[in-house]
Image 1: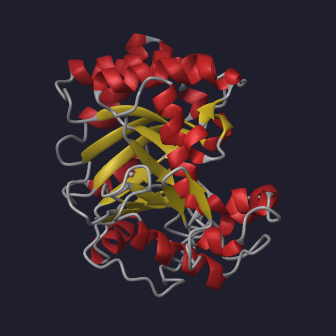
Image 2 (image 1 turned 180 degrees about the horizontal axis):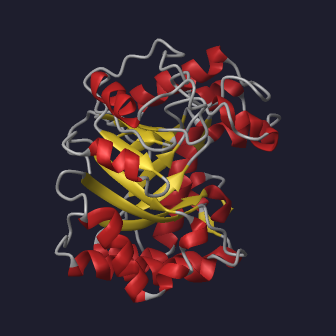
Image 3 (image 1 turned 135 degrees about the horizontal axis):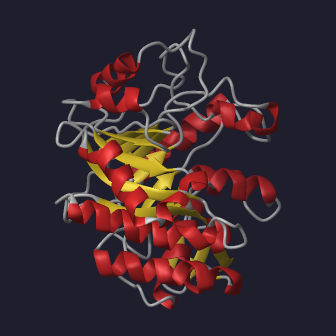
Length: 346
């Protein structure tokens, strides 16, 4: 299943790819949200992720059958520690569009770090949003989670020794218990690109791009031929150590830039996306045979992002004029799109 995220339980060996739709695109180049939805549909994209509610996108999604991950921005977490505010949020942004819009997950915060002020608000906001969805009779149809990044790991090598850092454990462990109790997955943003460019002496480019011709690292009985699997299995090991061996991980972001930084090129980015789409159908060495729900960042290049985040302008699979940057076949995948674009593979 392939999906696009407006920028993540598989019983079959087919993986869904999702794209995330970039926020900061020139309005002169990308027109109506309805046209974006049609682009999703014409490419077979069945899921989308947006980082915060957008009335225009939500209205355009009505009747599209595209499943949606809707996010709550970090700067709104504190407000949602108030139960009434959470109820109002669900009423305004979810119930008003249901069932014409098919909500899949509510992502409460994105990459909140334990040392940040917002960290104290994540779990209370998640609980209030869950209570509000239950009161609205959504029951288990919409799962409530949050998205983390791999900086919460204190150890990631080898993958079997993956563990959350001491500073992160007090933050993430209660969230893990919440997810297990409510049958929701953990959303995790994985970027082999950034791991590679920060340590190119120890990590080879083929290992990061899924092009290694043989096993690069043995970890017990598990052989690793790519960095993506190693990063994901490190997270699974950390969850096991946190008492959650069966918690599912949805890869809520992954991508490679086409310019703007070291090894950022059309060739490398196209190679990464193509290989990731094909790879996630089969799982990891630690979790073989289980397709990985994965979201690619992003649907479009974001040409209006600031110079400080210039590299993030170039993660798109499509240009702002909706022309594809790469010759990528999604096959029988289902695509998902969001405000930022991620491709999700399940």
